[in-house]
Image 1 (tube, one colour):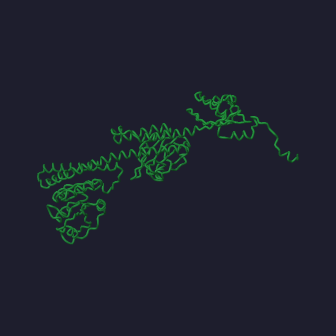
Image 2 (cartoon, rainbow, N blue to C red):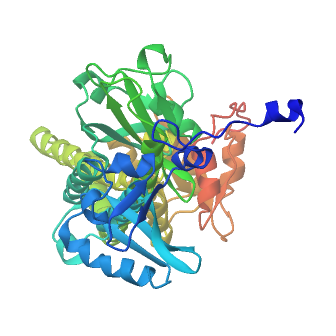
Image 3 (cartoon, rainbow, N blue to C red):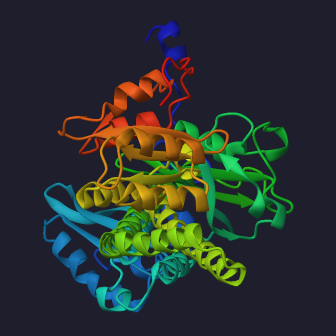
Length: 511
């Protein structure tokens, strides 16, 4: 043999534990455990992974004993017998803290099966992950499916408390978080309202946060962007606002329903880099279930609010004109009376009437706000008097304006309207161009004289002919608003109730 060729041939080195063969080196790099078992069921060889699972040296020990698997799984030994008969088997062993997927493959040599290869895959993380996923979905179902017979006896506050208790339990049991904060997003103001907090400082619990990318911490950023946020080192993150004492890292995810952000879920830890990608994934999954439960609760709230709103509207519809007529009678008697004691009693009665109407408006506003429907602040501040001979117009005005948060009084005659306007202060008076008891022009003049600084009068007209030329006379007197036609259109009514005062025209004719 040529000398150069001889020098390139590697000398033979026997395979020993100290000098494993190239094949054994490869096998030891596998992520799965591998062992060969003889016909007696004992391990005769094992790679490094398999050995790491065994409490002692596995060689020459029964397969299941070598892995320290409890005896209840030892009947799987039968599968080794059939494997030596030439059949490949796969099976799963699940213990409380370990889950192994095992495949037995016969090893043939000269048509004889002298060994069986056991390929073992530790799927504990996968199984535990799936179990956790299943538990999260079950928890979500439990959060959402609150028992109807239980909810019947619970008001909204009690339902929220029930949901919060369930959330605490599942967050602790499934995610093992101790410092948590859940906030709900007000879609109108963009304010993040605290719902559930544990382990947070009092200052953090009372902190006002808004869904904005800057100036509102990580929570505000997540609510504004809809993106989850991992903060591995709080001391180096300019967005982080301290929530709990000693917090060094945090994880914040948005609560989304149908891709719409409805709140945030924040957890903190005193450890650096306490949360990883898997924590993020599980928290995002759980946040979906929380969002669904919150949406269900919101529907329940809306349902109750709708019922309450309907009740308020029914009360208004049935009693508003009766109450207003009583107030008008009191105001008229006040105009006619010259007896001091009687006047005092009438003044007290008028004040009680105004207090009653104010309370009714507050209740209506609270119900509307609870439903999530936005209210115009300009309209909330308005006290309005409607003077019209048609009861249908008065009822319509009550329904529309009360729903907008206005305080509304009404009078069916011009004289009653004038008496009310003298007894109480109104921001706006809606007066028909035609009345039963006096001409439209005279009513306009008298009502206009009752207005204090900043008040305005708007003329209204139906399909009747303005025989008294009220509109023309009012224009000559400087009236600068358009005439509102009846029945009222809510959009136009709102437009002119909130419109700035137009420039006054110089009177051309005395009204």
